[in-house]
Image 1: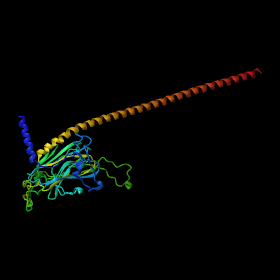
Image 2: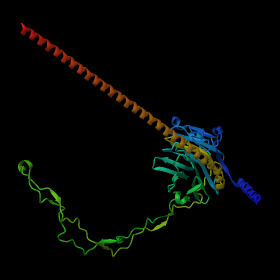
Image 3: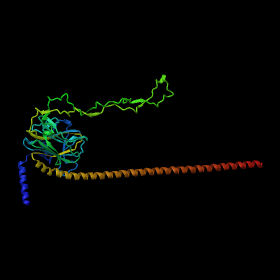
Image 4: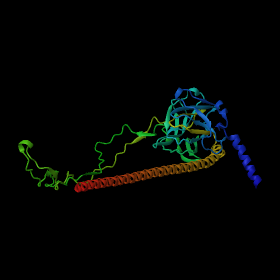
Length: 439
C-alpha cells in the first residue's frame, strides 16, 4: 500500500514537472538577486533603495530574506526580466508573491506589475505601460484594497469589486489566477476571496445592450401611481396665519412712541395654524406603470473570447510610492500551474508564517515586560523623589518650629531681664526716698 502511494506521488510529480511552466521564480536567497533585478533611476533623488533582509521577525533568518523598502516618502522602482517572454494564450496564468508590511504601513503600495519584454527597466515609473497590476494598496483607513488592473487595448481597467487586503504586520500571500475561459480568482493566504468572469467584473467591452435611441416615452404615458383626489376640497376655516401677536403682551410703561417707534406686541405660534393644505391622494386610474426604455443590441459590442490573453509577457516589477517604508517582498512566482503555486506556497509561505508569528509574539512579550519594568522603575523613582521632598518639607517644618521656640526663649529671657532691671530700679528709688526721709 505504501509503495503504491509513493508510486502515485512520483508519477504525479513527473507529470507536474513535464506540464508545468515556471516562467519566473525569485526567492532572494542570496545577493545574486542584484544581477537579475534592475532598479529604476527615473525618479532621481526621490527614488528609494531596496535592502536585502528578513526584517525584524521571521521564521528563518536566511530563507525569509527578501527585498525591503528602506526610506520613507520615496518612490520605488525595480524589475526583473524573464529568461524568455511568453504568451498565456490557451493557458492558465498565475502570479503569486509575498508581502510583509512589518512597519504597520499607513500609506503605500504593495503590488506587482507585469510588463512586456521591451520595458525600459532603468526608466520604469508610474506611467510606464503594463499588462497587469496586482496586489495590496493601503492609504489611511479608507483605502485597504487589493488592486487587480488589466490593460486592454491601451486602457487600464479597474475591477468593479471591492477586494479588501490584509493590513497587519505579518507576511501575506497574494495569488492571482487568470484562466483561458476568461475567468479569474484572487486568493489571499491560499484562501479564495474573489472570483468571477473578466467581462462581468471589468469594463473590457461595451455593454451588450443599449437603450434604443429611437424609442421615446409616449406623451400620454402616465407613470404616476397616485394623484390628488379631485373631490377633496380645502375646508373654509383651514387658512390660519402661522404666527399671531401675543395677546398677553403689554406695552412697557417706559415705552416712548416718539423715541422707540410704534409699539407692536411680539409674535407667537398660532395654535390654530394647520399648515399647508394638500388634497388626499388616491390611486391613479390612468396609471400605466413605470415606462421602461426598450433596449437593442449594441452595434459597438463585439465579443472577445481572448480578454485574458497577452502576447508578450516578459518582466515583473514593483513601481510604488510609500510614505512609511519597511515592506518586504519575497517568493515571487509566475507559472501556468495552480497546483505548483499551491505546492510552492507550502514550501515557502506556510513555513514562514508559523515561525514569524512565534518570533513576533516573543518580541511583543519581551517589549511588554520591558515596558512594565520601565514603568515600575519610573514609579519607584517618582515615589522616592516624592518621599525625599516630603522629608525635606518635614525638616524645614522642624527647623521652623525650633526657630520659633528659640525666639520664644529669647523673648522670655528678655522679659525676665526687663523685670529684674525694673525691680532693681524700683529698689534703688525706694532706698533714695528712705534716705531723704531720714535726713
